[in-house]
Length: 446
Ligand SMILES: Cc1cc2nc3c(=O)[nH]c(=O)nc-3n(C[C@H](O)[C@H](O)[C@H](O)COP(=O)(O)OP(=O)(O)OC[C@H]3O[C@@H](n4cnc5c(N)ncnc54)[C@H](O)[C@@H]3O)c2cc1C
Image (cartoon, rainbow, N blue to C red):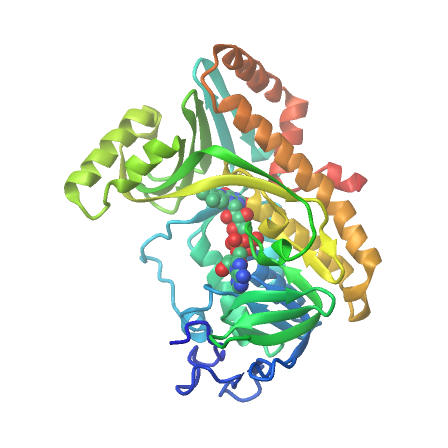
């Protein structure tokens, strides 16, 4: 059976018939129709101004951002599987289960999402970030020092994606393809979609925006260098309930075994990120969250590791992620431009990956103004000149923190303590906060 069918936006189904058909029509009037080229003949199908490969947070935000000026295709192999309309119409109630994945959005990302009329529900604003290391007084970043009401929000990924999906579903300019991209010809910007047939179906575009994440298929199809670092740790993300209601503080604690982070969520809920060895992460995730005995064991490990200041916490669910950072050597190739994790990924300790991706889009939003600007090499160069140095700086800073703080070497502990004291000096402290909120000073020089 063909899994990778194109899904019409009206009801998320292939209109009930042939899953291999090449022209899947949206049966709601006046809406964009997903059309795939004649796969049998291998001929080209629909042509778009902009084809976005990857419908993660960054790809979807790009579609919403550019829908006011371009005819857009957005393609994703998994995001739209449930059917765009079904997913877009799903109501996320206040009492719904918390999503396992959460993101610390900085003020700049929030402003950008608000400019797209994206309303996120059940978020938790935070005003302070505290950083601890045993034996040193905590380093505190406070929003008041940059005259902001808060430093950002912790939001569930599902609640960032949902309003983006609603906008995509409602737009007549955007066609959605629930397919895996299995081929790409850069000379013609021709994308081959896996529709279950031997040759697949094809669509093309003036510009291809590669937003297909860390393992980007588009990037791997092109002669573009990629500097990648695999970290010898895993991130175990734990959804917890807490004894105390959340205050507007998020914190990170550095221990010789690795870092720990606490991200407050609405009410008595929070998300913990526990950086640890692959072996320990494998053990922790082998414990089943629907088994009472395993849950007790997991909680015992958690309480032994996490500091008592947290109060009583109870883990409900947990999942682990591998850690890898990378940065590509060019942000464009012919008429392909890379954004978000397809271009750069960063250790999540900094809570910056998605924020950097939203910044990429903000820059492109000011460059891609009309049809001609989509294919302007000058624009691609300006984008790269504005974003590459800042993304590289964020990556280098985070790698430095990860390497300096994530180890048990005694000499490094002295250095860490000195670094925290220096970072606590008012001027540097303010500079670091400005970078974290997305109000970068460096940006003004690029
Ligand atoms: C544990 C953890 C915590 C994090 N916390 C934060 C945080 O607090 N703040 C922050 O800013 N960032 C955070 N991040 C980083 C953030 O999650 C990522 O930077 C962000 O999700 C990247 O979004 P993206 O859309 O660029 O890529 P992705 O989310 O990877 O999306 C790529 C999409 O492309 C699709 N795709 C891939 N290949 C194909 C193909 N061949 N055909 C069709 N579709 C394809 C995939 O299905 C996917 O939907 C965290 C990351 C981790 C792992």
